[in-house]
Amino acid sequence: MMHKKLSMLISASLLCGVVAMGSPIATAQDINYNLPSAEQVQAAKDNRANRTVSERIGRRIMNAYELYSEEEDIEGAIAILEELDPNDDYDVAYVNRFLGNLYAANDQIEDAMARTRQAAEANVLGWSDQAAALKLAADLSLQMENYSQALEFYNKWLQFTGEADPDVFLRIANSYYELKQFDKIIRAADMAIANYEETNKNPYVLKVASYYERKMYADAIDVLETGLGLLPEEKTWWSQLGMMYMLEEQIDKALQTLEIAYLAGYLDKESQIKAVIQLYANNGIPFDAAELMMKHLEAGEVEKTARHYYSAASNYEMAREYSRAADVYELAANLETDRAEKANYWRRKGTAHLQAQEYSEAAAAYLEALDLGYNDPGQVYMSLTEAYFYQDKFSEALKYNLEAQEYSEQRRNARSWESYIRSKASNRGVSL
Image (cartoon, rainbow, N blue to C red; front, side, top):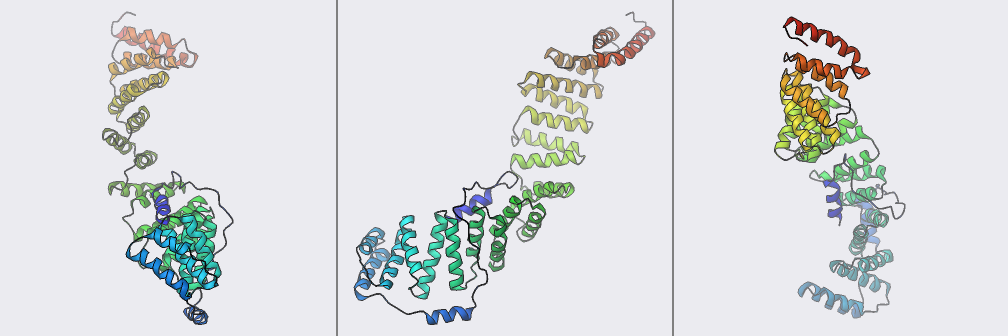
């Protein structure tokens, strides 16, 4: 269950939201990280009573153990132990601990927890058995998603054994995460990091989650930078670091980080690719933004939608690649289902052609926008005036110029153009 919990946490995008959690069952206690010394633990061992089960109970336990270990008959072993009626407190605790293990192996988790808890709370078992009962009670509580109870038993186990087990610290950190006590994650995760012999990514994941949930993005950045220094092959951390830089408005670092991750092949989600595209656009590199979008649209790695083609087209336009922009605006228009938006894309196509001095294509695009009911026709009439004028089609230019004069926002500019059109036509010997 612990592995499952951590797998869910690790696979999720922090910018995109973390693992969904239920409400805490109870307020979790604080963990005492001041562990007893080896001398103190040894003294506790020496002072602990060295008891054994009674002969009657012992024989039945041996029978159950043989069924379990030699014949793999868990249910048979459970049946033998369930028939026992021990009356000595040590016998009761020992049978409960054994049954707890068998129930756990048989996926009877609630029964396992009940028996194991009774054994642990009796506190009469030998040192090793008592430690095992405390640990199993904690692990079972975690599996049952009773995180407060898990913390209770992990704390008891730590104080009983004095063992700085990094996996236990990791499970403590995960329990605090599930309880939404995000500030308490850090100490437990740091203890796990300090005690793992080899670098384990999971404590870093939990620390990032803690800082992210508390909007402490600068601290999350520090964790990710440290983590990547140790585990540079962790693909998701590169994108997370880039996103954290963006949240901290460190745009140059965000672009540098995500660009490295992209070139290394670490970004394979549409949202990650679009983040790089947006950073190129925001950093005054619109051509690269457009090219990247078109590359992944054509590869099918970004969904082919009107808005995505529009994004590429507008970036080509900002990069002064007007002919390319015009072509892509048409791709956007062909995919658009909303009539008003489709008209707008055709108008944008016309403007891109006009800037490329492709006047015939510009006029055709503007007329398409009008046919679709573009909501500001006066503006389009003025653009048509210009497109026809530069083709020396003075009659058409004057026609749309007069149409533009019907709109107050265009009237003054249109009248100036009218004089210019008539003068140019007269010089060319064209009668209007």
